[in-house]
Length: 111
Length: 113
Image 1 (tube, chains in turn blue, orange):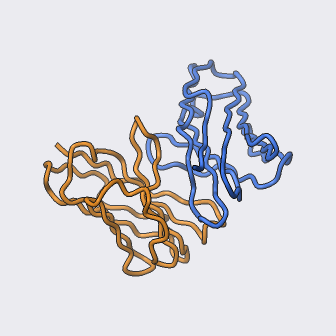
Image 2 (tube, rainbow over the protein chains, first blue to last red):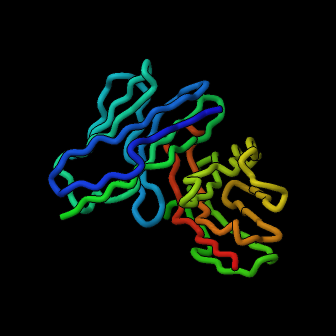
């Protein structure tokens, strides 16, 4: 069964800290790994990763994939209160055209 | 493009009533997904369509749930009869053949009392 596990489930830090969110997966036919940010409503897309070792970056957020060890990390540097959200990791399974999501990490940034 | 449009945004209904949730995917997208999100279980895939055809409905909880996609621009998720445990946020998402990222609608918050 395809499975995506995120850790930690919850994280509280102070503004300005750097955080690392983890995502490990077990899927039969890997196509890509995606990160989403969910505030109060719909998940919004952050990154799609398909190749190992290539970092994707957008401002203070970055992510990398390790296809050998079956995990990905999402880094956020110089965190701001607006980064508070649930971060979701998902696998796009080849041949199935569907996203399998992890439970999410609830990140809270305190001023 | 207005993105994925879902209606209604909120629905409160009594146990036993029929509930119909609606979704309009992004124009040109050929994959459509229905997800359910609860605190306990997170985001669960209920069913997805490719080119209007249901491909995988293994996530549909039971026979009370049904989904249709009569054309490329409209889909419905129906619950009949509804139960309190169906209370959740239901998201619709669409993508281009699963190759691109999925774009989510704003969700329908369903409360069954």
